[in-house]
Length: 271
Image (cartoon, rainbow, N blue to C red):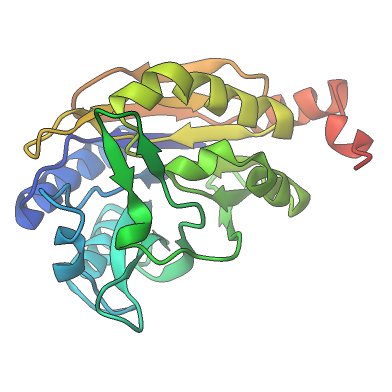
């Protein structure tokens, strides 16, 4: 199955970001992708954390969700909407949510980011918990490919990458593709991004597709980028360092089967 991870350098204006995302989704579709995954915060990288609140949508309604559904339907793609803000019971919080749309434009899965990023090295500070309400459950969905193989897909977002128990839960539920839409900081990404992605692939014998924000944003933030596709042996199959673009590659069910037969570590778990 051909898949695409979309790298963006999102700005502060929703309409501009949606236009950029649409162009990249079209590029992915024209390249033969069946699945295209947008990065975390593809719709906005605001000047302040609270800028997300004004864009919060009710589940099943809103401009961003209509955009994703329309793109999936018109381009005949599975589209994973990196993350977008969905409303909660209180106006001071939103969920940081991944939504999955099938080629008919139907929303078939929702995952609310469980782990909320906090980082403070004295020069940079991030505290998602100020405006984000955490999710509380892992989510998988099934994606039947044109080639006949049905992929079990586990959802995660950015900071989740540091918590291997989430990915083990996905593996226990049969996941063979792990998605990690992200907006890693340049500082933490340079240190840990690739090693964590490859580790999640190796320890769960699964493909990992990780679209990222990558560049210097209008708000001054610098994200690491390095969108990549990693195979179940930890081999990086495709990558883009900085700037907007489409990282495309192939998922091979025979490769997956071969690796899991050669090294059946998932069946050797003790704890």
